[in-house]
Length: 188
Image: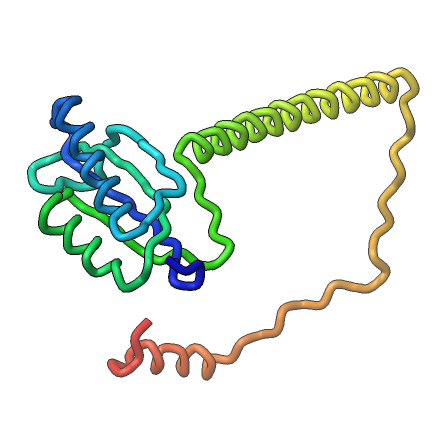
């Protein structure tokens, strides 16, 4: 098989979680054979294990997830797709061609990144709390130092401009308002 004839694909499968260990191993063995047929090559695989489903699929609330990154000739993909759909019958599957320079991350890598992000968020939260405590202590020290030497409050100067009285309203303005309020075409 020529290097130009090969494309990279990713397959995500969801299978029933109630398979026995022996049946599960056979199922994945058959899947690996299907992906490797006609010169295909499995580059990477990730067994994510049993996870809860967002909604029920064929009376299952949980499913066993697995992902495979493999190389295959694009002309063989319809046959691979048919074999998975008809013969293997997973609960769900997704087969797609990956873009150039695609990076396959395992579920464990995602979990590690998420844990690191949670730890950083917690560290930032604790640092912000400590900063608030430090600011409060600083204000208390300043207030205590200010209480020892009381200062005279400055007199507030009044504005030199006289206050303007509110404009007087005519009865015509209220009549206009009443007319508008009574109008059935206007909704308030």
